[in-house]
Image (cartoon, rainbow, N blue to C red; front, side):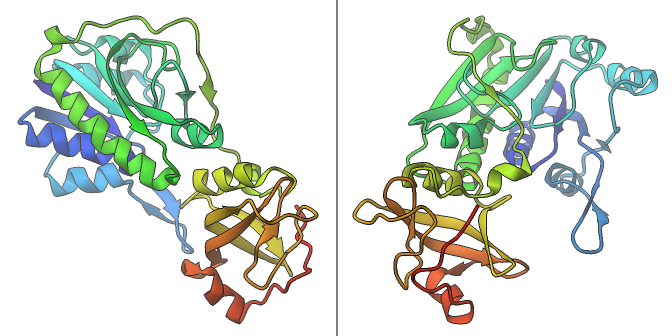
Length: 303
């Protein structure tokens, strides 16, 4: 097929690679413009743009797709289909209608659960046992289009980073399978029941509330690992927690440090941080943190 690929972050790269390896004619790669990043705030291309350049593919990165010239340029590609994976821009109706067979999206949830921007994080936060990917024919609504295929994956204590990487590979393989025999994947309407929305993650959500149960706190840590990193503050410094274990045999006033290993009491039970990160430092094991930044037993950590 002659296709355009539309994606931006790491999650989208395996699908781009799979389309290329399968021999599809990738007419153009659309991605979001380079964004300021790092201490110098220099514009940095996204993962998809970098990979597309490695593959020798033409890249376009319009700020929006509302401009008539950009829409005309897209239509002029003469596409059979457009493949979308975490692009980050809304596709206007004229763009959706331009490819001969339509636009197909790799979405990181089992639709209709977790429509929206942050399906992996919301699945972890909610304590979902299963999640997965859905290949969807796109329409005007937010992730409301008919489904062509789904594949499941177990959440099973994974961080958002690990689960996203797994779903990216799963979705890439499924998209290539669907495009290879579209007539074998009839588009089915999404069920009307079970709809939930995965709102974009707000920065304030990363602050840990030790008044919640240890199980909830541990899920929040996994949902925000590796980024933005769930955190608490102590002595004016932000400490991110990247991995923790629930301690069902420990309890105390929420936020109280219970021992010299930084076990922290929660609303129910406690958590023991395993991997942490100080501001501007590399990820380290908790004992390494405590050697240079002691947080003694009896310390009260406040939200």
